[in-house]
Image 1 (spheres, helix red, strand yellow):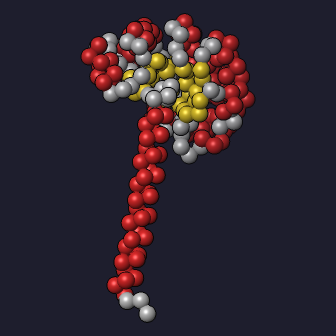
Image 2 (cartoon, helix red, strand yellow; image 1 turned 90 degrees about the horizontal axis):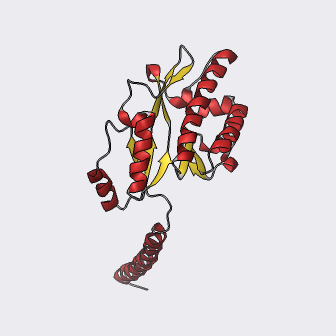
Length: 221
C-alpha cells in the first residue's frame, strides 16, 4: 500500500507539471497578443470637449503611450421639454464648437493620429441617454429632426476633414428600440454625405439588440 507521503509527492509533481504547462501556454498566448496588438487599427484615447486648443505636449504624451488614434467628442444638449437639441453655441467650450472640432481634427492629423468623430449627448435633468423617451409622435419627430441635423453637420465635417471613423450615436437604446425605421433612414442619409467608416456605441446591456450592425463597419460597446 502506497504511503500517504508518496501520494502527496505524486500530487505535487502533477500540480507542478500542470502549472508549468499553464505558464508556457499563457506565455505563448501573451506573445501572440503582443504581436497582434501591433496590427490594431485604432489604439485610442478620448479628447472630450477641449476647453482650448490642444497643445503639442498633449499629443507627444499620447504618442509616448503608444496611442495612434483620438476620439473627438463634441457634445450637444437635449431639452426634454422642448424635444430639441442644441449645439455649436457660445455656451460651449472651444472643443465642442464647429471651429474647435475642425481645429482638433487638423491638429490630430498633423500629428499623425487617426480620428474618430464621436458626437455625444447630454440630457437635462440628468437623464441617461439610453432612457431617452417621449410621449407623443410629435415630440419624437421634433427630437429626431434635430438629431439628424446634429449628426449630418458632423458627418459633413468628417467627410471634408477625411476623418477615419464616425460614430453615429452613443447609448441611445430606447430610441433605437422604439424607432428603428428612423435609424435606418438616418444611416442612409449619413452615407450620402460621409464615405468613411461608421460605428455606433451601444451600452453593454443592449448591444445585442441593435438592428443595424450590418450597416456599420465596427461594433462599438
